[in-house]
Amino acid sequence: MVAEKKNFKHNDLDTLRSRVIVERDRVTSTASTDFPHNYPGQNLAWDFEKFKEMFKLKINRLSKTEMEFDMIGVDAAVANAFRRILIAEVPTMAVSNVFIMNNTSIVVDEVLAHRLGLVPILADPTRFDFKQKDETPTDLNTIVFKLQAACRHNPNASPDETDPLKKYIHANVYSGDMKWVPQGDQTEKFQECPIKPVFDDIVVTKLRPGQEVDIEIHCEKGIGQDHAKWSPVATASYRLMPEILINGEIIGEAAVRFQKCFPEGVVDVVEENGVKKAVVVNPRKDTVSREVLRHAEFENKVKLTRVRDHFIFKIESVGSVEPQDLFIQAVVALMEKCATVKRALQATLQSE
Image (cartoon, rainbow, N blue to C red; front, side, top):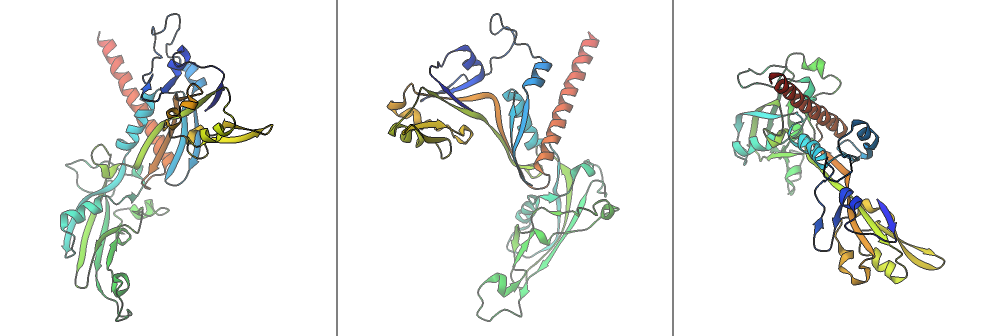
């Protein structure tokens, strides 16, 4: 957010309510104060119509594994609820049981099982049921993989070859060597998108001639709250939109020095009537390092804030579910939580 003002204060009511204030040695006005009876003469009760008018969601970048979007008009508690749900409560399919028939590799069984557990699985979790502790594996709750590999000398390799990947066959065992074994009608159900590891090039273990692995792998549906292997995201994070307010004009060589106080692309230096002038062009790139506040020449000329209800949200999927689908599932999960609380309140009121 860009702003240029001739005069500004750190303690005016609108700033305290809507901005987090970044000063040289501290950050103030960090807590939200927009709640009823906090400010005399102002009705700050939550209003659904006002929320619909103010709320905005804008997608800035979207790929198969990453999404960055702006969420505007919500409290930090709501943004953080989405972050926590994405990390811990959106289900995926992950390795739950590893049956090792033979493992003569250098990696011991426990470590090998752990490495397999962290391989992300490309499978739609909505088409599987949660497997209960007393349930047996079925095609409705379990995915089965086989991992069988044996290392041997490559007959076509040069006698002087030193690269193990060329000297041996199956010197490395990769996640791509995990072969899906369909159960029941899974072949028909997943005909359009066969189940497999998200990435084929994750090194699981290394072998040398005479060594082999023979493993059966079972995958189940779960959530990150139970184990990190079920978390669908590498990370889900947000930050507040930076705001840079300039008091008056910063011109001449001072404009160049002012520009160097920020990351590239935040501030531009333009010429007006032959005079250099600093202009804020893209504050969202700012890391809010506060470097500019260290310089005495810019004292009282610049103010750094963050917009309290403008969140720059980033989702990085591990690849099993696309990021836009993850966010929709997080919204559904939050709605279900709200419905649960609503039913509990209604039951309490009826009992009274």
